[in-house]
Amino acid sequence: MSDVSIVIASHSGYGHTAQIAAAVADGARSIAETVVHRVDVAVLGDADWELMDAADAIIFGTPTYMGTASGAFHAFAEATSKRWMTRAWSDKLAAGFTNSGSMSGDKLHTLQYLALLAAQHGMVWVSLGLLPGWNTTTSSPQDDNRLGFYLGAGAQSFNDTPDVHDADLNTARHLGRRVAEHTRIHRAGLTAIAH
Image 1 (cartoon, rainbow, N blue to C red):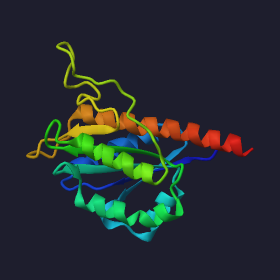
Image 2 (cartoon, helix red, strand yellow; image 1 turned 90 degrees about the vertical axis):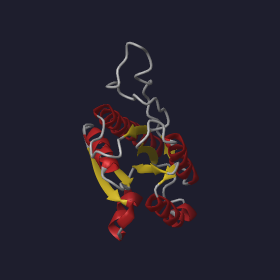
Image 3 (cartoon, helix red, strand yellow; image 1 turned 30 degrees about the horizontal axis):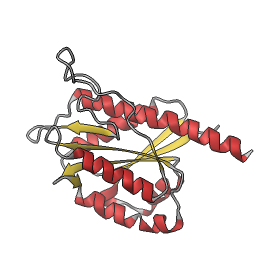
Image 4 (cartoon, rainbow, N blue to C red; image 1 turned 120 degrees about the vertical axis):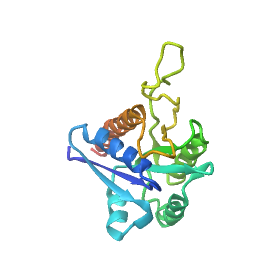
């Protein structure tokens, strides 16, 4: 089987979400025969759209601002309507991640928005697949999935520092690996059915 292609389509307002996107990419690349491309949805060119159209999976990423995806990501989502009309992304795998300054920060709403966008395109959503961490008196804020999200990867980064929490970066790497693994399985299944 040839390499699977994953595109991380994301926006980062202050650099935190870009670091998370890089960790997602690292996780996906850790699976053999996986090619990963990152595109900034705020400055898309024709080549970026072609990468997404050709990809086996698209992972959406955005900061959470005022309880939803960033304005740049919303503009991108609206621009995908041409793909929606032709069902160009139907049956691709999809996943998502988000970041905010607060522990909750209404990130669940953003992840639901990303999953709904994928559903409108007929894509197949891949969840985080991790049990929550940091939810007992003996657990640690260094646990993967320390914020307890299931739908996708949620991260918290303080507004007054450029740093992203190590546990959130590890969780992002897990999401990338999981999407890459499931993309290989999905494509192998589609290939088997075709033959």
